[in-house]
Length: 107
Image (tube, rainbow, N blue to C red; front, side, top):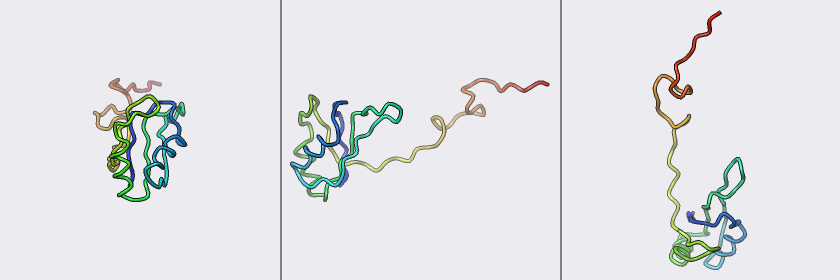
């Protein structure tokens, strides 16, 4: 079962989460989500537990628990919603120009 773990301290690292969730059951993986440019934690992670029973146990045991100075949110991860490509989707005929008129080159 894949779990969402939110409200993490920006100082929390994968080994700490691995140890915390291992106290409830078998942890298959821990993925701390980081900013692509800075590498800094975004304050949430995904933890994959060995099975649904252990995942539910982790949710009931660890949700709202204080950890590393923060109160955790732990629940079953929802499937990722599909996102449209581009810069925020939609838009008029001036996509990419951020509302400015196109200038024609004059030679």
